[in-house]
Image (tube, rainbow, N blue to C red; front, side):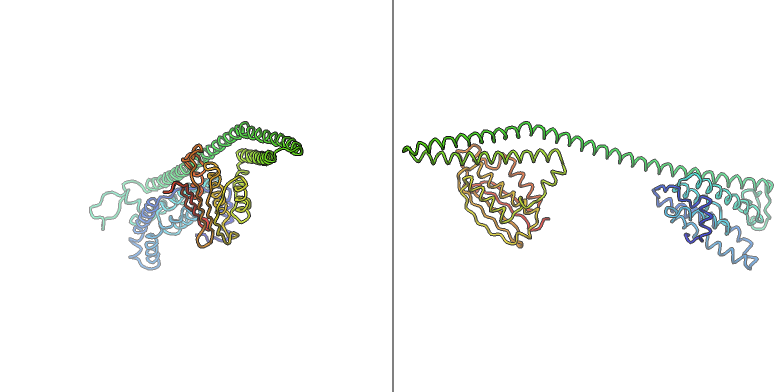
Length: 463
């Protein structure tokens, strides 16, 4: 149906049938509509052809061959509507051509007109198609009335009752002119009905499309409103954090710095007294206090920087994505693990370790970050709930076995919240969620000896 010559395509484009300025209309084609159209078109064309064959077969010759060919074609002509959604223009033109060439009923072209009007918009296209369909319908109906009365379908409706329909001649109840006028009116009405049906289908399809667009726009607006609300909430959290957390930590850093200065002055005073024979124990105590105050100042300054990082993450979601991504500083490696353990021992943690790690350079970076955070959270949790107590840490990492972290520390009962280690805060539950998201397992709690255990298992490759 698409093999038209360039000249024919140019002519049809000039007429408006194949113009490119019309819009495609998405129509939900129902299978039962297709079946009904095929059956009805075949039936009407078959009936029209059977009337033509009544005398042609008896006479023989080319007329009989042509009649038989038309009859066989009438049984399959309705299947062109299978392509009406993809090629409505060509289906319409082909249907019109079939009605012109073969003695088929014009219902074929009028149904094709409905399919075309439903799926293609454009005023010029619609007008041209309606004019062509009207001409074809009038031609087909008038052609039937021009046939001998025994070959005319319209003659059956206008014939007088007969006693013997096989042998009595057909006598019209009215004039042939009346019959032809009625046929023309019927052709015009059929085109009008087909036009209205096609436009109705098109309007419903356009309404459905506009409804979908409106719903999509409403959904997008709701998403934007949610994003705006979330952004406003993030800004409010950032402002609150800046007014409270950052301010408080800044005061801690300031006070720690002042303590460092004061202990320095005290150290000078003690040394001057030492020259006169003072106790060396006091000097050692002052030096230790100075080191500890320096650690407080350094840690508080680091906490201030981390607070500002969190504030920036709240204000800028993209910055949050970048900050939360795995990096060399937050992924498990020999260097980061050594630095983390050294930091814990420097802060007074009595640490006993068993480290068996291999091929960490091949470890998935996201898995490495979760493993690093697991060790960090375990050490932080032990230092918080069991300060000064010995901590046992086992870390194994191999491609064939994955990563296993096991941390044990006793529970110190004279520390607030000590016995309820891991139950009151959000650190370990949050760690458990991250481990499960990465495809691993995390468990923690007291064992039979009353010691707190944290176990984390992670796959080598993220699931």
